[in-house]
Length: 77
Image (cartoon, rainbow, N blue to C red; front, side, top):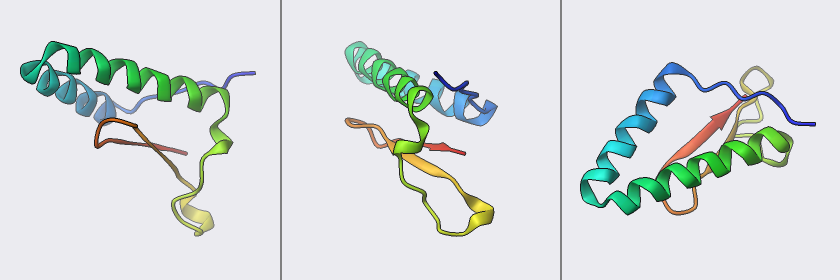
């Protein structure tokens, strides 16, 4: 069973900015970024609990997932 993924408006803007940035450097980088981002999204929807919590504080139970090749982190709740 997969979970539903909601991407915040700010996260979407950040992603689009990154896509534009990498596209200016090299269109291949832009494509790689998109592929890696969607790969992480897919992993999160299939098994979000496989990732560790950022904080031990019960009020802020967020998890983070790092992209392999790019300096970006996806924060999940």
